[in-house]
Amino acid sequence: MQKLKSAYIFLLAIWILCHLVFSVPVSAQSSLIQEKINFSNKKTAVLVWWPNLEKDFWINGGWPQILKDGFEKRGYQFILTHEHSKDFEELISKSDTIIVACPLFQKKYVFGSKVNPLSKVYIWALESPLNLHQPIQIPSVVPLKKIFTWRTDLVDNITTFYIPVETRLEQPVNINTDPSNKQIFLIQIAGNHYKNSSVGAIYEKRRQATLWWLKNHPDAYEFYGVGWTNLLKDADKTLKKKFKSRYKGYTPDKIKTLSQAYYALAFENTRHPDYVSEKIYDVMKAGTVPIYLGAQNIEEFVPKDCFINYADFKNDEALYEYLISVTPTEYQNYLSCIQNFMASDKINLLTARNTGIILLKEIFE
Image (cartoon, rainbow, N blue to C red; front, side, top):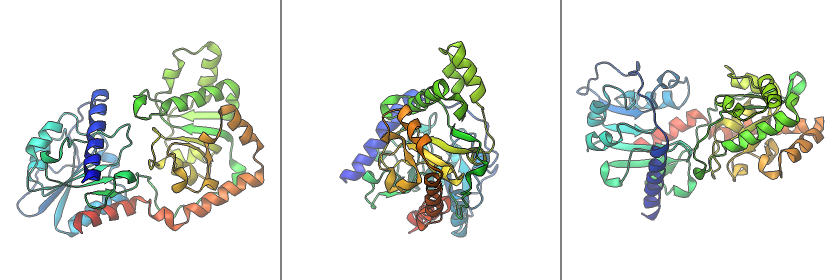
């Protein structure tokens, strides 16, 4: 009971914090939601997802399709919804199973008052502490069945169950271990945001690293992502010139772009044990060596010979000195270790497909 209480306190605290900081604009109605929903012939399962992201939801072979197929094989109609859908209140009041996998902003109180008291409600807390704001405030609000989380310290396998952070991995993963076509020394593909640092945000580390490379070795560095033009507000003419030559904006193919570099900064949004997202895995998929900053227990997830730990260095200058000292043989060893790891059974446990299988098992067992 103590662990369950801690889980609820954790979710409530983060929800309150983030509710004060963030807001989401009302989106158009989802095109994936059925216009006429028949509640009489079939049981209904609803997954509450992010507004504006429905078009990217159905990934072939990934957990969304696995989840949908699993419910439909058991006689359910499986419906994707979000809080701005015109059918949202009807869905949560009549559905047999509800999986809440994203925040509710405008309808968080409606959810508590309209949810079907006979339905099975699951919380999937898949976000980082920086973005995690779930709609369930106290256990008595809804008939909560289970919590799914990546936080191992909250897992009791009674009411709270472990599901790894979404990695976007699928096997097989073919790694190009030939560095002969690489053209960039160091790259970063990430957003530059200015969010509350009290919950462990490390966006400032991304900015600090970018500024150091622009000032000291601009020709060796390229970076992509949203929000970086804010860095120019207090920049002098020299830095602005370097920025414009090294900032590349948006890349439509992240893996292909990463593959052109020898090294890539892979900084999480936040530092928290167990929170290891797709960022380091994307770099490894590209056949590039990650320079990682994030979970303090990263070596429990990725072998230490597969990456460079940014936290091991006193500053960016020390990191730079190490990178230029790496011999071709040592670099090739990084790539070989990455190749072996990405072909291992451990990766299978992190795939999107396995996530879907775990969810179905925990819901229907």
